Length: 182
Ligand code: ITT
Image 1 (tube, rainbow, N blue to C red):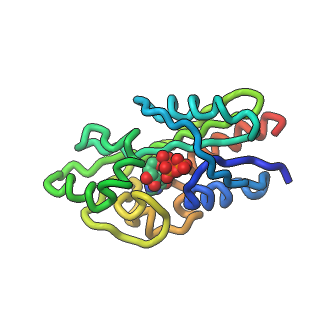
Image 2 (image 1 turned 135 degrees about the vertical axis):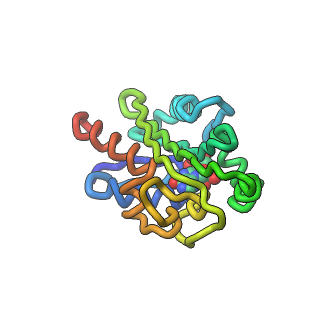
């Protein structure tokens, strides 16, 4: 089976990649430190990070963020820092008086094979008023995708992949891969 290296320190992401890619690839998790620049967009972070990773090719990197309308897109590109500092509880507190609960989860996947390709997936939804569910990771307990009643943390990996930002980005990646040599 073909090998694909996923550079991440997040085992939750690995589970989601393996669930969708396992028929075609053996996905290896490499938790290396890579240069994560502070940039305005997830795409810039991904492109910059991939430049130093030729030796792991074919390799993918995933940078994701939660963009909350009422907070003007915060935490967005700062999602990792905000998760480590405020966490889900801090976001719920910031949103306490807000009636506009709309948010968008975005996942940008960068693939470095012979060249760099970028795949993006968006998942619109809402921030709930209190945490629900124990599955998933990160902001999953406070995010309900549009058209659903359950938070991502109340869904199985398969269910989450069907609707999530990462599932969408991964399906674009799979489509691309089917046309190329990897
Ligand atoms: P790596 O950079 O090592 O891959 P990370 O967890 O820092 O792992 P990101 O920078 O992409 O990943 O994620 C930013 C934050 O958003 C981080 O706190 C994640 O837990 C969270 N996050 C990313 N994808 C998510 C998802 O599908 N569901 C819930 N939270 C997510």
